[in-house]
Length: 363
Image 1 (cartoon, rainbow, N blue to C red):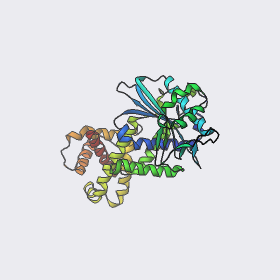
Image 2 (image 1 turned 135 degrees about the vertical axis):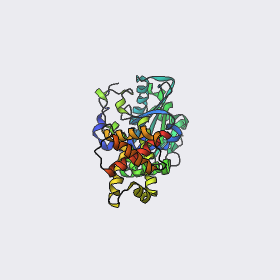
Image 3 (image 1 turned 90 degrees about the horizontal axis):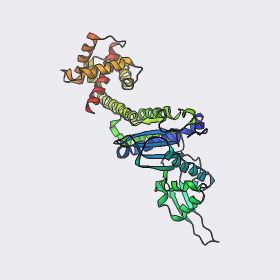
Image 4 (image 1 turned 120 degrees about the vertical axis):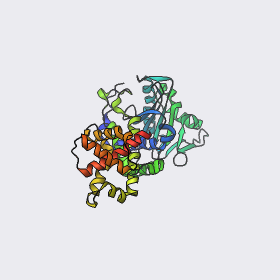
């Protein structure tokens, strides 16, 4: 599908914040119930603001959740011209998804969500001349979602009447509305995401703020990538955040948490055993803090060399404590390899690599 407007939002970075943050919120909110054990990828600024695409064991798409995520500075959403414009576009997305060339399962379906951080008030207004009383439903904090098929008949008729293209009516049963508990500013939304990741992962992740910054960076890289030739295709992998990328991010963060927890509980003892002077502790912490991310960077050959070395030697170690294992690994490494790192940095990187290698073995 060619759409010359599809990349227009790429030049307005501020418009991405709510969409991106909503996608991350929903990913965290449903992580263990929906995402953890599923094969999926996320698309941003694609057919819609963002999509969750779920795959079956044959790598066919069997479910797509498409979201139009809209902010509203003041007031609430009502059944007016603006909302109907958005709903028409969302229903058209349903048609486009059916036409998309990506391989789909025989039981494929999609759900089309209109989401917002403001109340969505749907109402068939009163009409004295026709003896009609008002019928209304609000999607908000105490009623966070509703789908078109379960809306009161009167409201369904109002929506259908205002969907100008009759061929889109068949998509109405796929339409849903969802309220997201976000404030209006990007900074506060990020603070809320920090709270959400703490709620979901607890002590499994040590630095919650860094975790959210990492996820935002991962999603931002994809959302600012142009659809090539203004052609929207789910087969276009540059517009995806894959499950493996999300899992890799969480693995880094949870592994780092284990290491940081161990370090903070036994900092003096570890420093003593590793012979880290008081004046070198800051250098040590900085080196092992950054090591977890650098192990995954293709540009950091030295870090990858050390991690691979540790993984190779892990089952051959004779020591009983983590600190002694580090010394044993250092001795083996220095006898056969050369490195640009100084002694303190090398101890820190090996300390982090040991935890990373143990975590890989456990999983």
